[in-house]
Amino acid sequence: MQILHKQKKSSIVNDIYISKYREIRDLYPQHTPIFTDGSKQNNHTATAVVLNSHTITKRLPNSASIYTAELYAILLSLNDISKQQHKYYIIFSDSLSSLYTIFLIKKLEYPITRQILLEYHKLTTKSFNILFCWHYR
Image 1 (cartoon, rainbow, N blue to C red):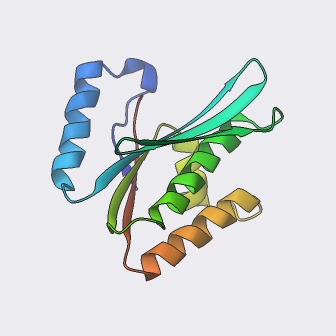
Image 2: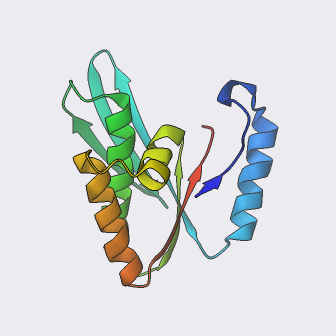
């Protein structure tokens, strides 16, 4: 997992973000970027994944938290990767807590975390190279 920038979200200047993003992309030019996001507004929860010009959106139950939406977006991105020919991806998420939960804390009591780790393992055993990177949106 790469941390795109270590400052608080609110303190990152847009130019710094763009510069750091380009740095990461230059380090991994063969990796196709995927952007994930979860959203909750007026008790409506949804998730989205953008890969190239392809966008996947999914409405989640109203009771779902923003945290669940962020995790679900990561799971959707992995599911989409499994259908692709290309083997190199970098998933950008603006949810640092989701990335920590998956890769550092490995909260396996959360079913979605288990699903993500299982899908990630399946893909890596099929020679997919998938990186995760926190980004500021």
